[in-house]
Length: 107
Image (tube, rainbow, N blue to C red; front, top):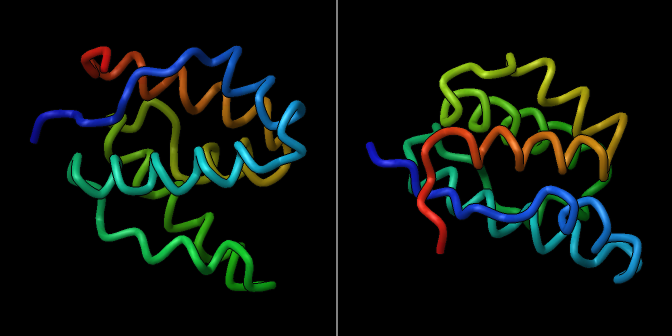
């Protein structure tokens, strides 16, 4: 299946959460979740789980599995999870860079 993850500037993905007090981070997760699902990731559940304690960790794991699948295992599920869970904005920028390198077309 063709990669439908939109190309974004990793530096913007890193800086915008600071400027928007974290709102862009949620927006980025929701948008890329849909793009990952359309690109062939196993069904990532609803992003509403991001606001539910404990469930958000499970959701992030499912998201990481989808990211690994769509990027053809550029990083493993566990590495994507650690990047996003522990390093937050840095992990988002690295993840976006992986998406950009999978052959996505600029939109």
